[in-house]
Image (cartoon, rainbow, N blue to C red):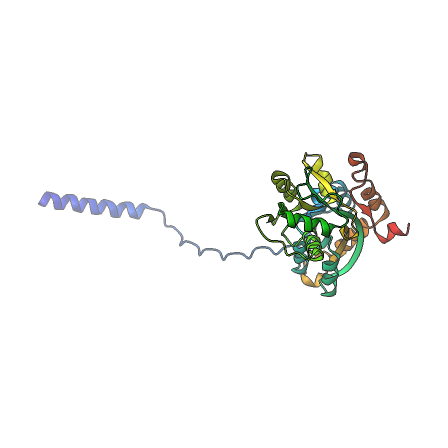
Length: 296
């Protein structure tokens, strides 16, 4: 017992001596206060362009935007969604400029004060495409509405954009003209961009409404869909560019947006638009339509 007590006492003494030999440490510093993240810097060398998918899927933006980026010394961030979503981005102050194709929606956007400047840029047209066998027999229809009525009567599959885009907006107008509220298994609402809808229609051998530029660009990748109805004046498809109201967001690049608009409506860029697609298809995918081009 005495031995155990002695050992325990020696152990305690050794522990105290070792503790005394340790260097004295300063009290731990209080953790630094978390720093607020840096706010986005307006004019940080980029322009946010919200646009319809057709300008992207057709390849037009890839062909012309590098010229603007080089001239302005900025990067252009492209958000390619439907016209409705593009305008919503502008309305919410999340884009500097929008390039879209639904004149009624553009006019409403301007009237609501979401935009401060709108200019005509170009136009093309919509076409109704479908399988070469044309099960609904729409080829030769005098109007788009007549073609849509035949599709509905036959219950032939039709793929809709279903995304509040300019193309979807036009499609709904044609259904309205035909006096039809489309519904049923034959009517497929995709909620996708034009390129994806053309892929779906091709896979399902369905009909759809497409802008001509995206359809022609898709033929380079291969598609079984063919143009069955075209030329109806209701299928006219104009594009406009709008500078977003800088009051929406202090980070909006108003000067840069106007510089972009001046650039895209200028004669040199309008000429590039006039030539885009000619080598591949023997025709331009878009027709220039700025005031400068019309008055040249």
